[in-house]
Image (cartoon, rainbow, N blue to C red; front, side, top):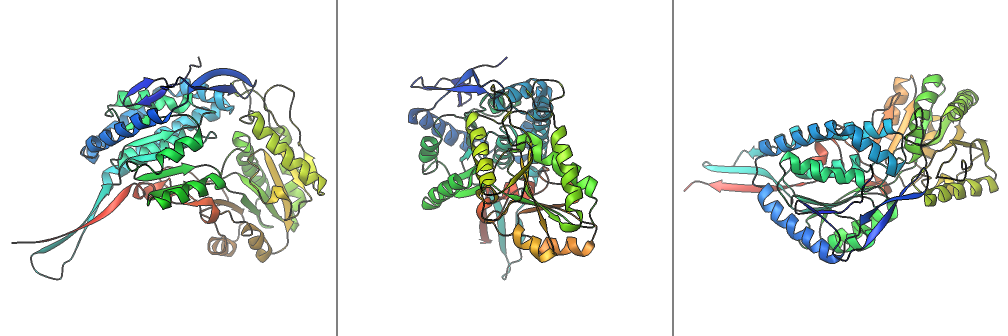
Length: 477
């Protein structure tokens, strides 16, 4: 079922010119299941030239016709959802059901971009003199270099590819080497959908080498990156040095605020489902659970019960609700954060240990007795860890929610309209969802502030990042 992955350049699959490959592992067994080609600079030069040619052709295709290609790609993705989900689950670890949901959501994203790309309107500005027409037009920015993470290898790739193609840009995308085969499916899908050769190129290899070569290259006009804050800051600085547009969707440490008047049962259930989805390896995952004192004990008891009920296992097994972490490095990082916190006085209410000695499985974990100076309270754990602490007043919870330099997502549960209004104005975040999970839909913005990055990968804002605004002023003879 699992096949080795090559480079997709100029509409063709090909091995790396130097023959170099990288092993791919199944996180449920830690066994090698395949290899992915590792691109050299010679391969990247081929991709750059292809993207340059592809852009010259694709930008001349009308938005209406581009929309048809994206629509066909979305339909093909739905037809292949089961196969793609199995591949994704095998290389990433998440349950097959979650993997299939990611594929279908990605198809919805393509549909959204297909339609919204037909509406990249300009405008006419009234002139000050007779016979003068002042036009504002939108044009594609040019070839794009995009870098995507392993936690949602298909949907994060589709967010960048879909926006680029809908606006008339070509793109070189580097999906993750840990999970290469599921995003690689996009190569065949778009080719069959009628995308001209060279418009989409997919490469893999050493991340610093690839980004260090593509970002400064004069052919590349825009950079889009999803990943860690340190890498994002480095790439943003590199893009800035070369005056490249950049979209940065980086890490978070999301506060989840539950007030005394909230529906505690619903809050515990909704937040547990969100916390342990994809084993907590989600940039918007709720992490700091800030619970008002009046409902703290009740919430903690119910949340711990939810955590203990999560069935952990191979993503391919029936009934699995949470798969393994993506690799042994991630598991070791999570263990280290937890052990340090315990040494500093934190308490493990449930979980806290790896499961078995095969694969990268880890128990859903709930911790209390936390203080703001603990490393786990300041660094994104990116694992199945819920950090639960009480708060007294609205001002107290706002202070803690805004304490960190992150600002990607935040959650809140309350029945008070005043509290809802005050949260909307006081919480420093790119996205705030109250009394439900309402993030990451195709039609809504998706992005952060502060160290969590800038730009959006959802809604109409996602397309703006791939467009330039040109002003044309014309007078009659």
